[in-house]
Length: 133
Image 1 (cartoon, one colour):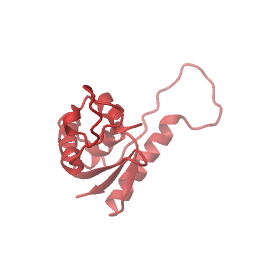
Image 2 (spheres, rainbow, N blue to C red):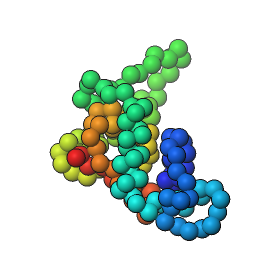
Image 3 (cartoon, rainbow, N blue to C red):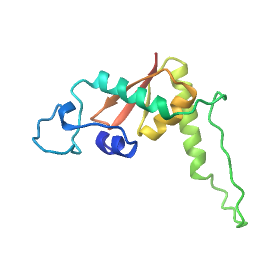
Image 4 (tube, rainbow, N blue to C red):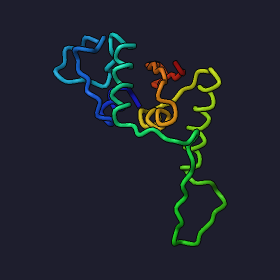
């Protein structure tokens, strides 16, 4: 997912005046890339912090829902992998390493447990680079 689509999905305001690409359009395009990346990312993180509810726990826990259909194919559900990914990312940044995520929804989950995270955007990989402050 590119930065523009991710910002639209998370309802974070951005426009062509912030973009480094001078494509002369009247609307923000999919090639949106801010000129002041650090300033834009800090503003974006501050905007997300307003909506994120901090967690009292240290890591994300699975909350399985009982199904009325008694079917078991012995495969872990998709949310198992999501929880594993978020907890692995938390472990990496807490150990002082760099971690990579791919959407602002994942960033919101990370910020529930670590609100003082530094974020950069890698346009070549269309991913977010995370470190603790």
